[in-house]
Length: 432
Image (cartoon, rainbow, N blue to C red; front, side, top):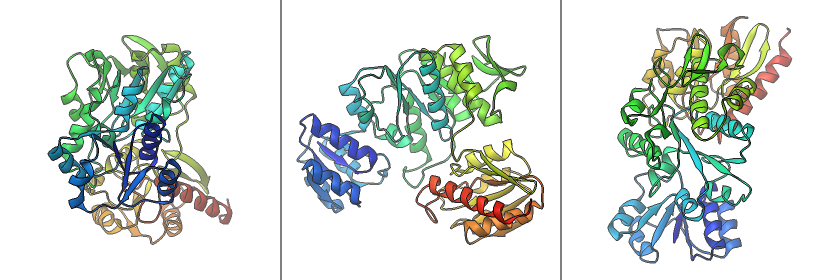
């Protein structure tokens, strides 16, 4: 078997295969130190950065190829595998062969990690021992090594869904859809088709948990799906209460997070968790205790009357618009490295001022020019200083970039932490 891509998931697949005595050929186009150390430790054959013409010969040596998440659709391995009749797998396919314990799944352009976190907590509070896996720090092939786990909650990215031979998880939720990852997928249709595969493993239509307020998700939802997000859905907000199948789960007034996107996430989590075996009481406990995840609309501090919020995880216009809907009239810090997306939809938001940053600064500035005051910053430090001046002692400064972090930072996490650090520096400088 060949494993292409030795990031976290690829290395986990490589280790799982060698533990089971499978002969493996490892391939990576740009291996880092961790990849080299892994193949050396395991003693497997390793091919570095093969030329495109060599893939036919490489695949003659194997029966299947495991492709790591993030390998782009344009990679020559896919055409070569199709020509050679070699099956392409995701690491989740291996997990399905080796383990039959229950798993549910979550996909969507935004909100996956939040909903996975909530569902896992709801199931734990219901007496189940569960492990979040997939597009997390724990690939599914590694998660199944936990023999005490009763079930798994899988964060299913489009990369994993698109590469899978057959995706198996039930129930499964699709949260929303907006353009993303067009630097990896062939086009928007390929991205949509990958997302839709989240429901391949369901046996009952009710196990498809669908945001019926999203037209793309609703178009793919099977008749009889468990819907959320609209007035007639099985899970909905009605009269200030989160309802499921006609019964109240929790009062919205009791939720620490109740912005529009928070309520959609809460509905999705509740519907999915109950389908997976959680109690309504556990769902209520989880939702009333949930204050959010790092870098997702996270309150940092207040400085001289101005609130600072870190939403560094917002790497698409869709995510930034969700943030602006929850916090209208903010001073927005936006920009970074565009992932091949149309940033034009950002114009639908209505910040009172914008600080444009990163490689996409000129594009962001052009979108808001004439709509509100716009300035450009050459660093995060300068962006925060300019935003603070623009806020003028009132309202909120929101970092919600709408772009990836890879121009100035190695991850959205690093970007968010730097924002919080520099806000802390500003707090120490300002007389409050």
